[in-house]
Image (cartoon, one colour):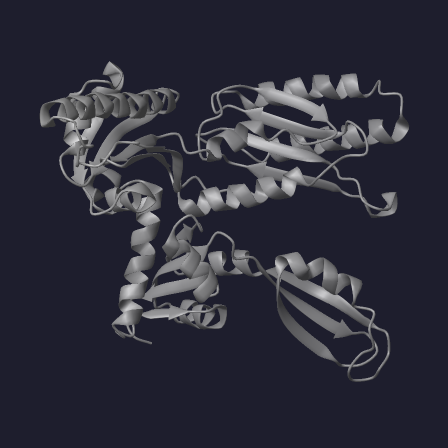
Length: 418
């Protein structure tokens, strides 16, 4: 499988799925080949290096291992020869004979990937597993925003990284109420309260410094909260000087704690508009608006989505990251019985283990799975043919959870009413 060059949520989603597949593969011995090639490497040089590895592998003592390694290297060379020049981001190839229950069922598998980011070094490895670390690193979100919500009672520190909003630390102030204890003068009470406030701000700042300074890719900090406490916290200068320079905005919130963190994100569209977390929320909110206002421009469920794709009327398709369906075609080899089933990908193994039940038509034990189709791949291919924008939505937001649980993981905004 070759990934397109266009960097998008779909591309990353496909890469993630391929990596999950590759993680599950193992060889019986060190016979799985992993190859990473940067774009500025000459294909002829790479093939020359692989021929040297072929010569080395010819000395492997175990016959089956030697054969499998040599076959894998040959197959990689064949795939490289299909390219006139390497893609802009380079190429990753994974090839080898994957272990099965029986050696008779084993066959060589090849995966060719054009990565979403440039490969920076040449890497060849023959091992019992595929080496995926370099591609896994590309899936990690790098830009980080820090969020602090603070009032007189508590402070909450969070990070927003791509689609992941994470609460890192919650700090309580421990401050007394505004009413002084009996016998204390007003001035003395205010002085003690000021000292305690300053200690509270110091504690919060120490946590903020420790957390945010650990991120080399920190893009900025937003401080939120109800009332003037947030401005006072910033004025005290307890924050590290490099973090003070990264403060992008002060945001008024109605809430503290986790709800206040979410409120900061909602009220900072200009800052977060290109952050995946914010984008995904807006995509689902737009769908819910069309659905709630009964405009006729929203649809959901797999069957309805498929119909709309075939009609070419979908503007934006929303697919949950956790949508995983497979279509099975079950036939009876003794009669004309045929059945099509739409099942969760995780249930395939159960179906395979129970397929030996009697045929509903002729009662013979001749049922078999004739064909299986990945519904995700089917829908993505249909979308590409019809130039439909596809957005992969994670379950990291309330909207993402709603898409997965309430709408079967699929929803769409239409160009016009069907």
